[in-house]
Length: 60
Image (cartoon, rainbow, N blue to C red; front, side):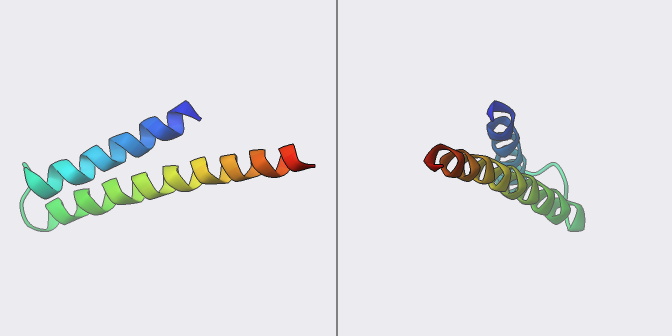
C-alpha cells in the first residue's frame, strides 16, 4: 500500500514539474506530462481497488 502512494506521488511530481518548469520542450514535454499523469492514475486505481477489496472482505 505504501508503494502505491509513493508511485502516485512520483507520478504527480513528474507531471507538475513538467507543466510548470520543464527541461523538455515541445512534444517531449507533453509526453512527460502524460506519462506522469498515467502513472499517478494507475497507482491511484490500485490503491482504491485494494481499499475497496479490504472493505468488502471485512464486511463478510
